[in-house]
Amino acid sequence: MVTPPKILMISYTSFIQKFYQTLPHEIAKISGWDVKVLVPPYWKELWSKGKKYLEKDFDDLYDITVGKIWFPGNLHFSLFRSQLKWMLQAYNPDIIDLENEPFNLGSLQLVLYRDWYSPQSKIVLHASQHQFKNYPPPFNFAEKHVLRKTDAILARNQMAVDVLRGKGFRGLTPIVTHGVNIDAFAPRHLPELRNKINPQGKLTIGFVGAMEEHKGLQHLIRAVENLNARLLLVGDGDYKKNLTTLAKSFNVDAVFIAHATHEEVAQYMNCMDIFVLPSLTRPNWVEKFGRVLIESMASGIAVIGSDSGEIPNVIGDGGLIFQEGNVEDLRNKIRTLLEDKKLRNELGWKGRKRAQSEFSWKNIAQKTIDVYSQLLFNQKQN
Image (cartoon, rainbow, N blue to C red; front, side, top):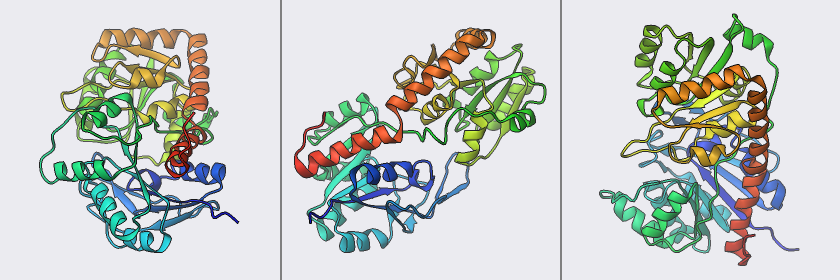
């Protein structure tokens, strides 16, 4: 009897949320391999100052191990305490997949521990860094060593691939994006919640995420001035106070919801008619993907996004694109969708189909399995 490959998947952040745990579930289901997950008990969100606790600690297709970490909330410094060493010694995995950038110290810890405790294991990391940066010590030393020792890096976009190649990485660099649970994020009729959020019955324009200046929400507020719609903003951050003041000064009908679980986010999205991601490019930041886009698209909402970074590539034909920072362009796009129900429904349908075909966790799981297979069996990806 052939022993199935052993896969250890590690995440400091994503796998805390049960909808993201769909990925290891699908990998185990599709491949039939032995999958284990290592995750911390919680993660501190820098933008909300709150803690996200592990939402699910059992799955019938894979094992979840909880390990304490140092510096929860800072991916640059986060390290597992003792559990990682123990798992490598006891489990001896064929593949170790750590959701982390090569320059973070947690990636260096993994590479060193692999060499000491499980030297035959192949290492897979993740990258979305879009700029070629020369990091200060100790991150420059960590990145250089990690890139030499890593077998594959799943890049979120072509920008990340270019950076990795520019830094001399010669391993596999397939583009494997974030995914979405298309059952959790799906079109649903929630009249009670919708009426609670919007008792006047106006069309609702929504946003979910960090309320920071670079997200461009100040332009979204200005764009909906004098439009007969309610603005639903879900999230928190240092810029929230500015936004609430701005909404009042422009007499915008806005509702702010500070905190929401992933399940609650899915429900709030079912109360939106239009979703907007108005991100702004900055010298040290650009929208590298935008998970909320594929979640809103999967929910069947018509989406509008700025042309910052990867947003146009994620949306494709499933929504509208406006010039970032251009309030008038955004207002025109919003007004068009408010007035044209047929177009709203058409874009919602296209977005849902795109999320199902391109970004479902089943699709992402198969792409990830292809990478694992290439490392383990030298199988070429399709």
